[in-house]
Image (tube, rainbow, N blue to C red; front, side, top):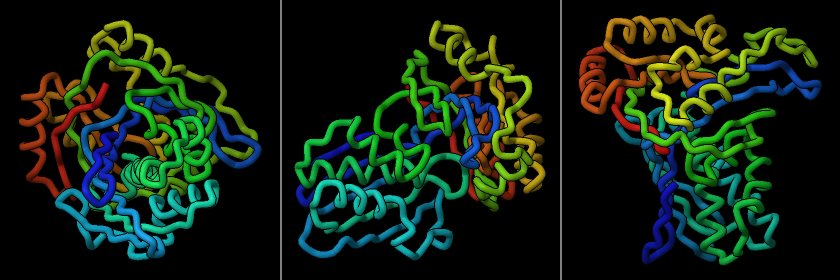
Amino acid sequence: MFVERIKNGWVVHAPAKINLALEVLGRQPDGYHKVETLLVPVRLFDRLVYSPSAEPLNLVVRGSRTCPASLLEADANTNLAVQAVQKLAELSGHPPTGYLELTKRIPLQAGLGGGSSDAAAALVAANAAWKLGYDRQQLARVAEQLGTDVPFFLAPGAAIGTGRGEQLERISLGRSLPIVLVQPPAGLSTPVVFAGLNLARGEQMPHPQGWCRELAHRLSRGCGLAACKHLVQNSLQQAARNATEWIDRMADAMERLPVLVHQMTGSGSAYFAVCHSWRDARVTASRLRGGHWQCVLATRTSM
């Protein structure tokens, strides 16, 4: 996340993320699923501008090539960035005022964390604009009320997420990975994908694999991804395959290309490939752009 002070407010560049590994460990009695995941920020950014004013909170959302305006939700009350400002106002006693301008570049219903990142960006911007002085831990307590992934975006770098994914252990992976992101025309609902696991409340998976910690441990010690690519796994991919044909179509397309490893991120529907080099990532993205995808782009993870 990058924050800039401008003449009339603050600009926050809110990054996407991928789940380099995701293992579902079971379902908690409260209905939420217990996971262990390796979250890695990606250099694809939404742009959020917050301008203080005395007027009631207002939101304008704009689309882009990678997130068309026709797909955007018109109701500001359901937008997580708006909800973040409102939550911070409740906590601080500051009136929920100001102007939010959000340019969406991170695709929707993709498993890339765009809405969560926007919420974290709004918390950071309003905290600065209102001169509240809340530290990261205080903002994280607000973030947890907004969504599982929101706390992750308040700090830079990768993290292992446990519990519902909100309990974070920050780690350094030591290097940036060249990747290609593919978003199909159809998004996926997170609740629908998790429901496809058919786990009863309180049920645990019988044989935890430990992909995430092992992958994080190896990468943080300088192991190349080629030597541990078998640990790049996602427990939700089969459930997503059952929900849409696009997961298999993207996997088939990747199998025909010289990529290091590929899989779905989060609960989908976005798909990523880690490439051998930045040049390979650009070439792979160029070859994929002839397909019927919503968007294809080459980018990098952040360390």
